[in-house]
Image 1 (cartoon, rainbow, N blue to C red):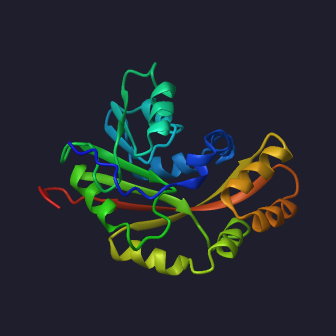
Image 2 (cartoon, rainbow, N blue to C red):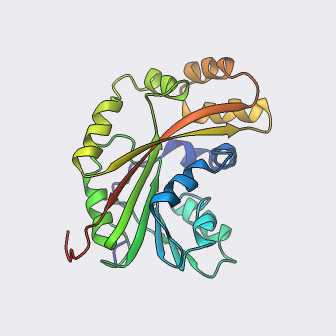
Image 3 (cartoon, rainbow, N blue to C red):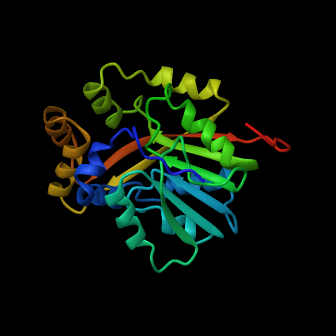
Length: 239
């Protein structure tokens, strides 16, 4: 198995402000629309799941409720420790140190590889996709969940901060890689305005975060995601 973490691209929001990212995770997808959408295409009941870039392990218990085994993979050691602490009472969950393009997982051993808000930029993610295909069993699925920068208001704020980000190019990349695309609308719900402002503050530059907070009326924010799904063909022994 692999476990190299050299050359990892940092994820500033969760690496620098894990407590605020925890608040963000609690606010996201208040109605469970994303897991419902993923589950409509992939059944992980009694199967083996890998969560790539699992961070503090927020989503691991959701998969663990039905899966036979869940493996969280995370390159940043402080987050690995936090994830292990979160799932220490769950006997079917393990957290391993590793990176997306060098997963510490055996070839052909996994039914579902899940990567959430990890592959925003499409081009350049090829090694991670190839690695996911390596560890998947024939018929298994790679599910990449990211934010849809074409949808207001969140997408407008993303593009204001990242003027060179081209959503159409990212979608074309995943399409060329053989992924299906599904768009899912969700609600983020915050307990108070301060938490909302703090979360926007770790996702955007100060100028854009302040403008975004002014545009949100109340404690609820509508956010659209893209779910890219690619299945490994049955009968395939290598990638």
